[in-house]
Image 1 (cartoon, one colour):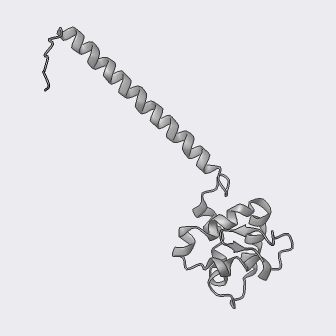
Image 2 (image 1 turned 180 degrees about the horizontal axis):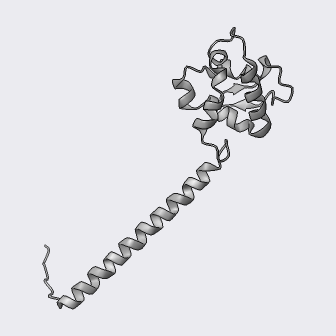
Image 3 (image 1 turned 90 degrees about the vertical axis):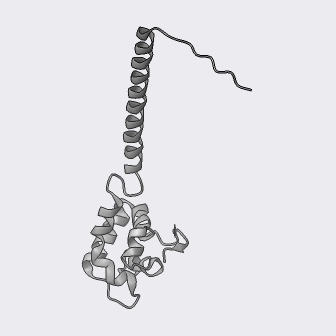
Length: 136
């Protein structure tokens, strides 16, 4: 059984509580915004550094035909892009190959993972795992 108790507070007390509540909400919103900025900064320092994965993927657009067909010739521009990405951020290459964006573009990771070997890139991380794939 519940009993309701009604307490009448002076209007000045209610206004003080109301402004305290507003101040608390503002502080909480500020904390949420600040934490979101921090989380975005942490996410920006992922496999591709501060470069968004979309930009990294776009830079590899010359590789599209070779990433979908193992018999397609790998263009020299693709080889240079992949070579520089392996040198600067090898985990980024793996992240791009396994991204949903790559899948939407028709890239087949099992074929795309062979591009460094098909380009004869000497410093490729052969034997490294990229998801369920291993770099040849």
